[in-house]
Image (cartoon, rainbow, N blue to C red):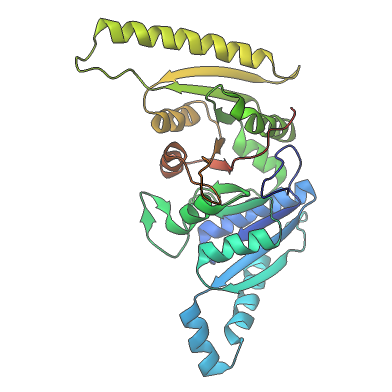
Length: 309
C-alpha cells in the first residue's frame, strides 16, 4: 500500500473479513478464507461490539468481559464455518468496540488491508435501497478494494469451487485511460481464476422532447458505431492469449450491467469507486445501484495509481 492506494497488479497481502455471526457473513468468510489461502495472504477476522452492550457488560461482569465473549464466539464461528476443510489458514482475530463501518475502516488502515470481504447485508441494520448501510458506508470511505458478496451466497468450499462460481468476469468500461488500473486487475484475475473477460460499454440513449426523433436515433447509431470500434481496438491491445470479448449496450447503465451479468453468466463484476475532492472515496451512483440489484459478486475498486499491464 502506497500513499493510501493499492497496486491492483499484485496479490493481496492482508484480507480483512468483518463478521456479525449471520449466515451472509459466514458466506463472506468462506470467500475471504479461500482468497487468502490461494494468494498466500493473511486473514484478519473482525467482530465489532456495540458500545452500549460493552458498557453494560463491563458493569455487570467486569471490564473486557464482552470482548472475551466475542473472541470466543468468533473463534467458534470460524471453526464451525471451516469444519472439514483442509486449505484453512489460521486467521488473526480482532475484537473492536464502536460503530461498525468506522471500526472496519480503522482496522483496514491499521492492518494495511488490501482487500475487505463482506456481505452486502448482515444481521444488523436496515437495508438502504437494498444495500446494507454498514457496507455502503465502508464503500464510501475505503481506500482498499472491497469484495461484496450476495447475502444468499453460502460461499465457496474450495478455490476450484470459486472458479466455477465466477465463470466469467465483467468489467464495465468507459474506454478512458482512467480504466488502466482496473484493466490490469481483471487481467490478473482472469489468469488466476481461468475465467474469460467481458468488457461492457453502456450508452445512455440521447434524450429528446419528441420520442423517436430521427435526429436522436441517428446520433445514437453513430455513438454505438463509434463505441464498438473503440472497444474492438481496445481488446486488440490486450496481451496475447487473453480470452476477452466486448459488448456495447444501450440503456440505464446499472440496469444494463446487472442484466448483462445475468445473461452472460458473469459471476464477478469489477467496478470502480468514484474519486472526490475530500479524503477517502465516494461511491458512484452506478456502482451503488449495481450493488443494489445484482445477485453476484462485486469487486469495488477505489481510485488507484495507473499500473502497467
